[in-house]
Image (cartoon, rainbow over all chains, first blue to last red; front, side, top):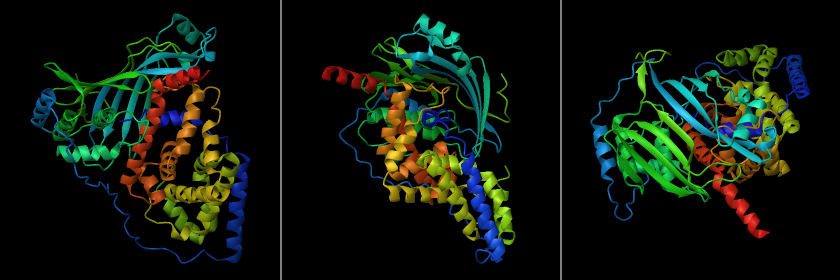
Length: 327
Length: 197
């Protein structure tokens, strides 16, 4: 789930418009005048609507079935094929009504900003890594509760670290704080989508959902990110997980496996070299996602090989209420 | 908020027009914020005022089975914003200006941004991205991300299927993620500039 999502950056960048203030007063005066005018005329706008209005159109996810065109031959990634087969053997989890999918996850994100916020730091830009721990409870009806603990950052430069605390930026980041957030209604990033369990159909659908525009990361990266997004912190049918893995097996990805996990990695150039890895357990649950910066950055200073984004998840389990599962 | 009560209030306002003021009190500020994001505070104030005048005048058309008046009101607001853009032909510039607006002093951090771009660059890139965005994508983005409507409410406001909302949002999300990613792009641009000098 992407509740700490890309839109948050937009919200922060755009900020809040100035308060309505006098505009609100003027608007209310205009409305009051319209109300008074209608009352004076003793004339309702038109006939009343009573009774049952036609039912709201049911939301239908219009998914065009795009014909899948095989392009050339694809060498099967045997580890992924085996993982897919293993996932298909897993019994689906029954989710009782009202129950929650619980996931505990650890995250590290790169935070960047202007250096002038750091006393005594001359660099124009600085960056540091901010770790958080998150517990999520997600219910089928869209109800989501997140409990997030923010931990002390990791710095690449001791001067930045000293200035960070001197300026009180730890309070802005909420370091040491636990924040509970609750969302209602539709919080599923893909509401209403029934993920196909046929590889070609799923791949076609995923292709539809990724942008095909200049400047985007390579197709493999986008499809891998999408696969991770589908699995993130949610109960996903084993057959869908298996099919997702089968789709990944068709991509040009580096695959490494152990007894307990399979990791797929793609290295790409987004103006700089990045390495994105996703690890699945042996039931095709999402376990980790990591993006590593392969080239060092001078400003802000970020050493080569830094994991600029990392998330580790426990496989989701069913809990009856807003409590962690019993040990 | 008693969202369930919107329909009841609007229905009652057909008999007692003054009841409609309650709808204004509930939703004006959110509608104003959305309009201000789209066209700036001054015009946004006018748009928000007009939304409630139109809503009042056409309240008999409100679907009495709707759970909330929000999609209806934001749908009117979106149409008014479109009209404004058409009339002034300055929509894109206003959009860019809104996105370039200086953030409040305390908001300088961009969590979850795995990039080495500073605030100014993020704003410039967002502005450029918003300018380049297709109008329908932009409307969905603002209604969902800034006005806080749910997928279903956005769908109702724009009278499009929920599936269309989600696919547009997925596309927009990918674009924004690309901006955040920006690591190499910043360096690439910098290198290019350096080479030019």
